[in-house]
Image (cartoon, rainbow, N blue to C red):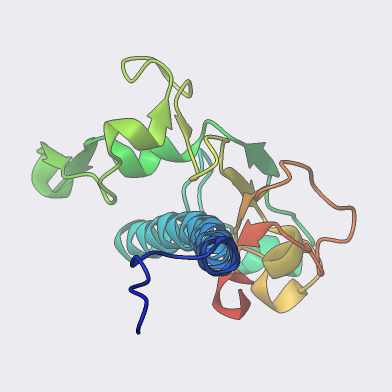
Length: 197
């Protein structure tokens, strides 16, 4: 005579299934955390690339990087004159994120004022501060910290005399602290290291 066994799982089978499910869920959580961290790095790098391109477009239009000073002439450089240093987290929005008014056509004593479109579109979620004020708006990275603009840049400028007018853009990255070694910025995201991240 054959006995009918009721269908069901033994305790051991249930424990094995629970262990496998726990392992898979843990692996997914770890993977999702890594993807989220990588997404923030990529978003910050993309913002810095946009600002870098905006600064270069500004330079193409005005033969100068965003600043309140005229471009140094060859005679200025030859005489040893240095670029006035700018280190700011509230500088770029006024030059890249707002429409600029320019005066054109000085010939014949007449001039015409024209508004230029912003060089970079800065979304509301990417900025902090009063957009009606002057030098009050911070452009934010994915960690909600400001992106710093330096002219001349430490990496592109002061240490490399042949590029004395280059600028640096820096996000302090996930740990929100800077390192003294700017040539090896560890987790900082910059316009000279974002391609290596």
